[in-house]
Length: 439
Image 1 (cartoon, one colour):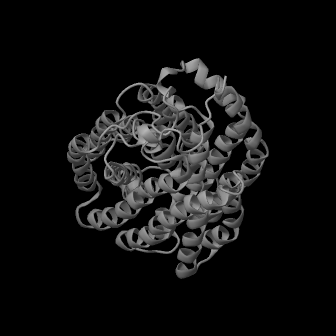
Image 2 (cartoon, rainbow, N blue to C red):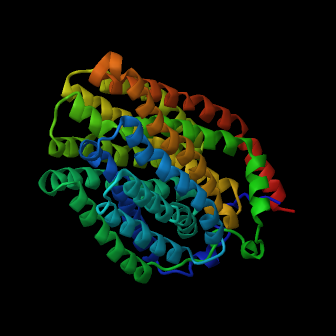
């Protein structure tokens, strides 16, 4: 019994249950929540050099702090929370999660030791585990299948909006008042917005674009796992996103350190530059990925996989320029182009994943995708960069970081092969799902 979505329009009567303004309001609010998500997650990137000097940390400890420790609890908690989201009120789960991770961001400013800060970041990861999977499920019930990649990309651009704001605000505030007060000032607004979100956003009917019988099916955890394991396209897609983000997080979490150490910029300057080269560029790439994917997938569904495949391949030359040049302007241009290309994957991959599965499996499917993405990408990417940088430091000094970023980035580019392999099986998997859906 599968789980593929039926053609658009099958649930037209159910789609009219919400007011015409509700989807737009919800999308705006969810995008803001996702911005808070990445402000609180990535603020450590702009602050870590200051924290390193204050606490006497190594690059490996920074990688553990910004990557593996966060990712481990994030992906572990994400699976049961997503399973709950496929059965309970998704809006309330998101509001509670936002309140928790924002509060733990504020608590990070009170840390007196590395262990205290590590535990606070684990708390941030626990809260953020309840953010994206329920949001993805909500969006798929607010908008029809043929618009999902574009809308998912608009939502996902909140990721880079958060990075942009975090870098700008974090850099300037930290220069003025230090890293501890910066954590406090960025955590409190999220707690307040959680209350607004709970009041404003409405919960849509689950599966409102599918058949009227959709809610009669309540898959078990085993059902969902078996379905996802049977789709080779999903397996390769998940591994592709994980490897791509191994390179993305592995280099991105040390981008501020690269500019501070190698290019000799101030923290405020780095914040402004990363807002442009790592934030605005990501918003552009994320939107373009979904928009182009939706337009081309009308002709061939495999474009949902070919878009991130080409993004990974084409990003390699500008990435090498970014890491290896001594010219700051060229480094910024290289990072900007690299980030645009790298970030095209998210909208198409989410849209295709939700097209493959039954509406009652969507939050869990997103959680599985993010489990793989974050455990390998966020968890191991920054840690690998830190370990390689520490290993090369005696020989190459401050240049050890740039060489570590080159190695990790090239590994991430190999994700193109996995996206290609996923494209070979996606049509068969969709056909299999459609057949089972009619039984």
